[in-house]
Length: 112
Image (cartoon, rainbow, N blue to C red):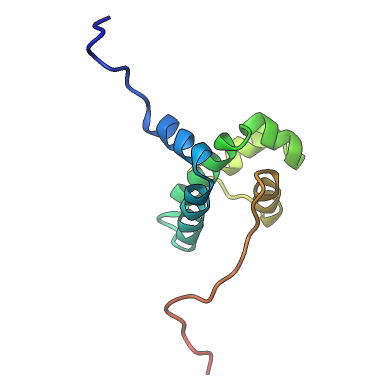
């Protein structure tokens, strides 16, 4: 191996390392990703971001244990085609020390 060539790191591994190192970034990253859940064409990205957070803050096996969700079910739920229940989302967020919150949508349609 040529010592002058740096070893490459996958984008996912680099993202997880940054999320682990910077909690404020992790919160912003997840908040932005969860906003994408509103758009069906972007939903997978939001779920993968939650998976990145889970990997950064304990790993999927530990999050599965702490949330009481089978590891395989957790991987399926947090896949690009996953469809996690609210219970699963809340359990994962709790296991990584975060919680869900609600803000008013920027383009609100009045009900009448």
